[in-house]
Length: 126
Image (cartoon, rainbow, N blue to C red; front, side, top):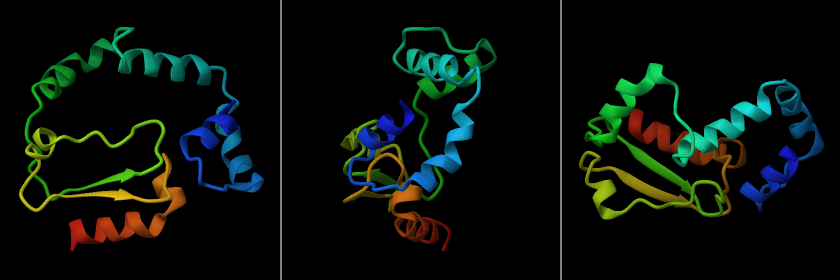
């Protein structure tokens, strides 16, 4: 199932068996499926989140401005979190924030195009 999801989330990423096999042991966990399903249920409002994080969730719900230097990266082929930033969303970031949609990249940008991620980090940190 996870191999199929990787293929769907990053359709142009041609990972090999060795790459998948190095990650696969993390899926061999009795809590893996329930935790993942619950995560999506919470994300879409179909289950309660952990009450320990209620205060943080309340603060984030106000959509406070982001005040640190920022580069926003989106994989053009990301089937999980497609780029949806509106002008209003971008207005919450500091002046100079760059939004990049990276062609040929799906959901796993650091694995698929690590150079693009490093370049963005160097721009922010430089």
